[in-house]
Image 1 (tube, rainbow, N blue to C red):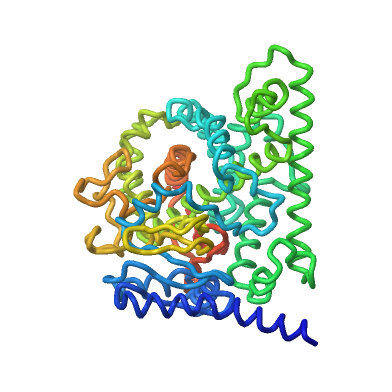
Image 2: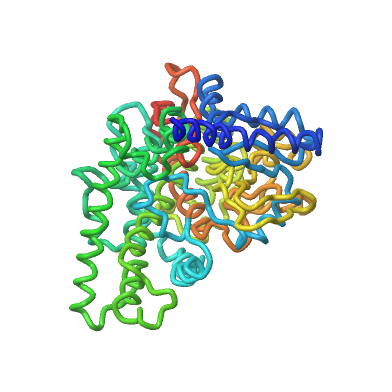
Length: 503
């Protein structure tokens, strides 16, 4: 009996401790603070309720922030810990400079997947991974992928089966194949996953995982109490299916990596071109000099990280762009005419063409501003007591930054809810140099910015151009409201929002 009482008391403490922090911040900082609290769920509950009420996971937070522009921070909770979300760019600048003082919150609970990849690793291991991968993401090397991206996009966009334009499926299929060919080689790109296009399986996995995390209160509460053991205690069918899908993908990648490793062992003079060859070469031939050493599990999770990030994020951007073009026919025609003019009858889009597609660039940046793939960063946990300006962060608290808070703020962007492609230069920077650069950070900033941002923009510009050269997009009048969901990333639910006509 005593253990039951102690357990109940411990649970009460865990639930109420972040509430006391929320109250303290409100008392101390007044209007500088927006507060939200929900036992155990906190921010996750806000996203879930907003999706249910507004059809948009981040709409409630956007409205709350818009109505409290004087606020510097949002104080809430993430599971059993307080969470401080910064809303102003001056705080974000300092936060990014202190990245080494935080560890990342494992949103994807199954630590078999990406916990040892570059997205989640810290310290010396992250620096080592960034150095190994960095050369593959330099712009001068990425432009060599442009012919291949053209070919993949052209092939995937041919012969659509009916009048519905399956934007997310097409975009995922294109970006998935590009990532596989660019970083893993043609042999692995030809493999299937469970009899399907692997990129579509990954899209399904991320969507289902994200919705489970952000919308299932039963799973959220289990997660708060059990962490990574959540899949083994009272698992429901959806959880069993998801865990099984993760296992299938892991087995698929393990076999592919083992096959490539055997090929490398037998080829002494192989030319290392893709990421996997380089990583495996270091592992097989130079690992004794690596500090820390590379493991096979790291190679596996790094590969899944690249595939996750390279497929889902760019596919979300392309899907959002297609939706906004279908919604705004005048804008669609303006962007289409620029593409026609720049290509001037040529069929293959080149690096020079991409540099001259100013309106396409501006449009994509507006898509990121209005519906960023990552409206918030991955939450981070303070590893020591620290100050960000005058805001004290205690060791163990979670910290984040709301990208949406300034991207739609009229202090920085006039008519912030409207698409205005004239805000942007052809290189994706703002025309107005007086705007704080930390007011809009769709790819994060500082030392841990998105390593794949150049590839994402190159791919998106080519794919959108190819789509508009072949099809005229329009909204499906049968669907009355678009749903924007939190699914690890943020984007449209995978519904039939768009129809097409041949040009």
